[in-house]
Image (cartoon, rainbow, N blue to C red; front, side):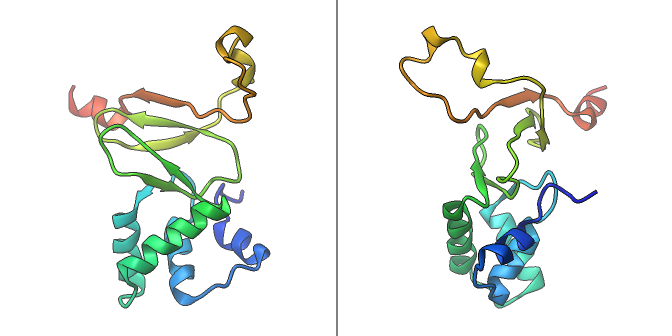
Length: 143
């Protein structure tokens, strides 16, 4: 089964100019359940391409967000995270102890779950849901 993130293939199909630096950033972001802060992307990209600069990583992340190929995910008390699975609608499950994030795909039509009286005239075109709880590892640590 192909993973949710086929970021490199999507970027090639768009004709995005694939420099060595851009390719490394895309490679670092590739995969399912990937949610990295910009500094984590920089650290991993630098391990693969030592000459890559902070500016290049930040600019590339900005371009990927602007293209709609990567989304920014905000969690309470943490830096913005970058999610390469923008092409497939999903929600997030966040551990309130360690901050681990998993992509989830609940059943049901979430926009339909918002009654007309609570829409205040908005036309809903997207829904972002964050489920919060404790992951199995954190639960195991606390006994």
